[in-house]
Image (cartoon, rainbow, N blue to C red; front, top):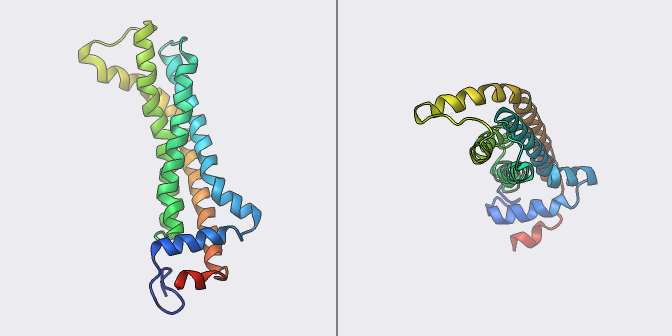
Length: 201
């Protein structure tokens, strides 16, 4: 029987399945319930921290001392929101809709969200934010047109190397989070369908 089948062998719609599993979440132990609901926020918090670290590295490399708040705010907020949204779209919602039944797939998705949202994206975001500030305040000589790509590549290489540890930690935390969420999902499936009759009418 597939996860989208009812006990009578009738297919259950995605909406009905999401509603059923969402209601079951309320019957989970408190730790599991909070971990499932707030887990993506913790991953997003790590991404915000990674954004601040990447921002700090680029500020030092470009000798930027001005605009500390204006560069730090987006570097914390945007990675946080992006990571939470990515995890919800790639892991949480597919689990609740019965579209993610492969534990390995869940782990890979969690790891990728951790790396992309909490590592790669903050690095890519920090570069233009601080390049703009450096150009505005003339904190470091800007490259000539023919050397732009080489300049930013040489500037970013040591920063990316310093961020390797953060990328690894984000991948591990994303993997751990998706692993726990898949375990909680399996617990949801094992809970009795006390309200299933309403959904099948």
